[in-house]
Length: 350
Ligand code: SAH
Image (cartoon, rainbow, N blue to C red; front, side, top):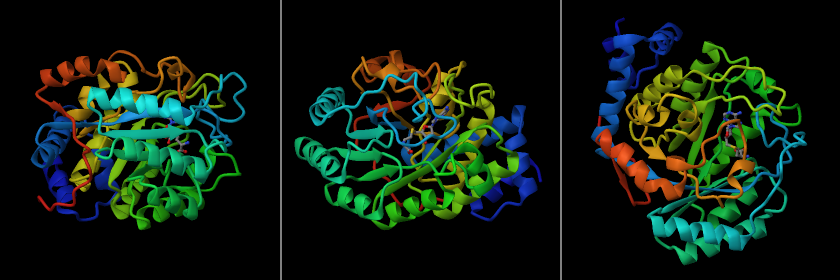
């Protein structure tokens, strides 16, 4: 099959063979351009040339987990730990609202300070101060009951990357205290409870094979998430995975394109990790079918402490205050940042 036939098959919703996925992921030059162009056209058909923005508030870098790739893992003694209290979080949201953000993403390590009661109080405060805004949570694995209580308190969406859909590969990235089964249980609970749910994975994470990536893509097709977070792995110097190379930008772009073509309506961010590698990754993400960006709304003095990987961008256009510079960057490629909640819409536009 040539590239156009592969793209047609992907768009039709039919299942691709292993070899067909491999050809897409190996596309180079004009073939890669065909793939990313097709994804960009699909995104444009559904979202016009609108880009949704999400204000990312990194509420805590304290974490009980020990994921081997992550800079805020429990065993990292060099991390300078912090947590934001309710007041700080509301101040961040206030700055964000004035800048035009209508979605706030509360992300953090698995920090026991944020009990269900505390989280529900924070969610209610944000929702009552900004009833026209969506609240997205990204707080890792919790019980079904906890997810349910936070949903009742008003949370709208939840991001929980599955990290790897191959249990064996998942096991190489995580300590034995964590399990693939629980991660997937969480994702199903979130969806059943009515959250707009996001899964996703890192590209080029240690030990990842092409077969693993194909499993991730098949998992995503079957799970039908409302959002998908995919960005390159970037090593962090104070983790056991410090010596592994960063993920490849072109491969990340091809994966974004495949996801857009498989799930036309999905909310797909051009991630901070993609923007953090050299070479204008974020705009290239948009041109490969992404339609969301998540500038940083955390208190400026905390941003460098939330270090999941080295050289993470948190200033300039990655900072929420840099929204005007970001607008100009997207203007230059013909895209427009919009101040809307940007919910998932299940419309059939094939
Ligand atoms: N504790 C929350 C939030 C995790 S941080 C949770 O468990 O979901 C958000 C995402 O950052 C993770 O899901 C992971 O895929 C990504 N991440 C962590 N370390 C990274 C690294 N070194 N390079 C690139 N992405 C990383």
